[in-house]
Length: 187
Image (cartoon, rainbow, N blue to C red; front, side, top):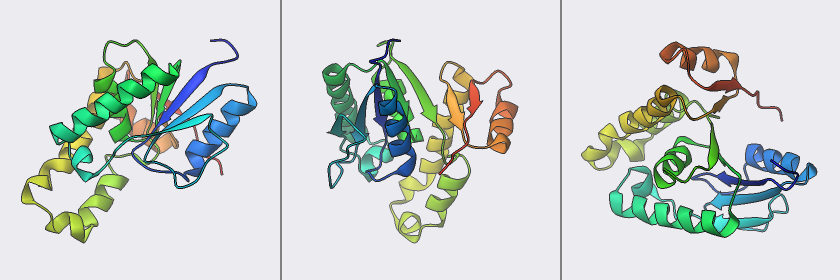
């Protein structure tokens, strides 16, 4: 890759997110082009050369196919517009969207497993009263998210960044040949 590498950061969240912004600023210092795709930021961010809106909502996260296909089309249009050399997915939703939506496109991507979805984030969803009272068919959703993460670990083709040695060891326990790399979060 040359000095003008184009990096697209994808998330199901909006800015600010210090980890995404820090990664973007580090890349810009190295004269890379940096793009953001997620929920539309409420203000401009100089860390990015351009920001794109992805229409994430609970239906997309719950994998309703109509909403999911809208996201896939949006992602394809974004990729067509910015033509990234690498995509940095910052959550399991974004990683699975990139994996499915860009299958066969031969674009490098990494999954940054910031929160270790199989544990902490799913636990938070299960403790959320709104989630508990929602439609009973949503009860299997955390299992689906966990299966997305395990699929990416077992597939062994997607590099996964993790913030702690404990997470790396546990994910390697599931697949000793997994593409798991330790990259600690530093404030």
